[in-house]
Amino acid sequence: MRNIDLSPLYRSFIGFDHLASMIDTASRNEKQSSYPPYNIELIAEDKYRITMAVAGFAENEVSIEVQENTLKVTGNKAAASDEERKFLHKGISERNFERKFQLGDHVNVLDAKMENGLLHVNLERVVPEAKKPRTIQIGSSNEKLIEDGNKAS
Image (cartoon, rainbow, N blue to C red; front, side):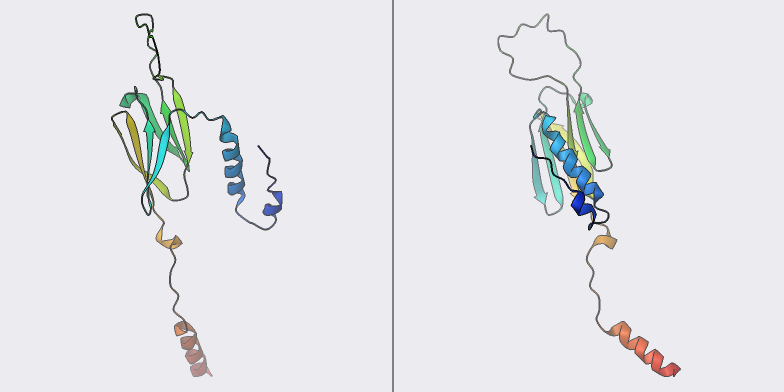
């Protein structure tokens, strides 16, 4: 993988240093395993769902944690003694896992459900009113300032 030097961007982009750290983190995530498999769905304009295949895990063996903009899903399987079980073929993995997802700004985790061996985590992007676009009326405030200035003269 190529290394990207983002230092020229620091000269003209102020406050975007977190973007560089996110790119660096994403480039280092190559070592993250592909287990368990997952889907990311767009449910509506600002609603998302992460679905993970966690066959063999009970609800109490899976934990979900959100810290800042990182969602971490962890599965810890209790150690079972394989002495009494003799597999001819073992295709269902029962190993522990940790999967991290980087969330965008203003993305909140709504809830999580487990059914039929699938873990569903529902997310929603809620943009605060202060961040939403607003319409500015043209001319109304400037005319009032000019009229008030003429009265004072």
